[in-house]
Image (cartoon, rainbow, N blue to C red; front, side):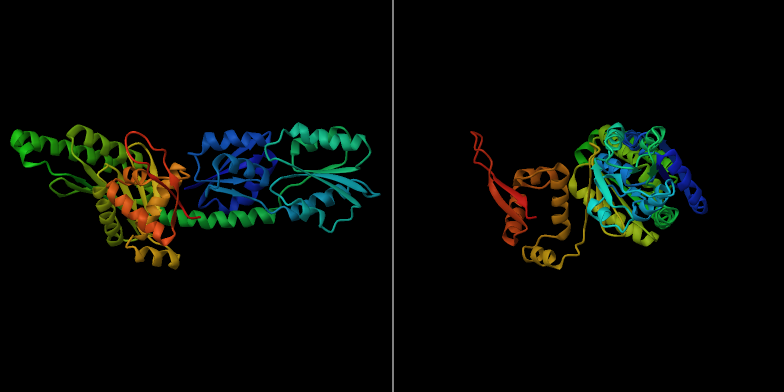
Length: 431
């Protein structure tokens, strides 16, 4: 079942889970309440493997999680705040018959303060102060309290429930800005659609091709037939164990060639097991192992993608697993746990045209960009590309010269010369 981790103050989580009851058929909601918003950092790092996606009760925990995990597709927040602001303002106005002349409002940096000031509200003066999402909540309390003691405000709107409690204890009129039931439901509808897509994707067919390179004749002469057959049986036994862990069906496709039929969800969740087995097979029998996985909504499509994947793995000569899905997205899993993802297609006709002029494939171009981005290189040389992509130095030079000719990369200088040889040209992708 699709697992959603719900993060926020306890009261907010209770409200979310109440709305979420109608979505519990396809989604399992796991509550992660906090006392202070800063605890979001620890929650998402400690439990990121326990959930498929995160749902944050508002823009504050969402911004904190984004600061930790970056622009991750697993992050979702109930971010509509305008209606919640009006609701909290009405709640504040009901606390005092004579109304309010000036109130202070705290907001996270992610919200545009100018939009708040332009809202049509019956308050003469709005003192809006923005804070970083991970601010010490005591600083926010001090901000409002000092304004109150100086007589500059007669009410407060705050995004922090703890601040609300502290201000109430001092007798200061205050209301908590929180999300609405409608905003919560809209976000949950979106998550429900994502859960359905996730289920469909996980039930896709997955086919794994594993190919062990045939030993050369000299090696065969040196070994007894018994030893060769024994090694093959041990190899099959290792892959049979993997097949069982993948809930798959194991088949021998020829001498040294094997197939495992499984589902996308099982392969994705246990890819590390396949990785470890491939590496052990290589280390034990000293043979290059090619492994390709194909995903598809039919056996035919999955097999087609698996054949493309194993062909790429075989050509790389690096004992890595290559995955190709139905969208043409390629993922390479190397033995050092490094994962590189790129697509074999492009939706930019101008780039496709430029690449065709210099006879460079879209897939190779995307692969190069993906490696450079993952390595976080500002600049790179032809030698860097040759090493990372497992190609000859001469070939990488030819490719970079072609890309420079099209304007897709630019030459930005040279490496410092040394006694070992001439300086090398430095390149970077054109932004």
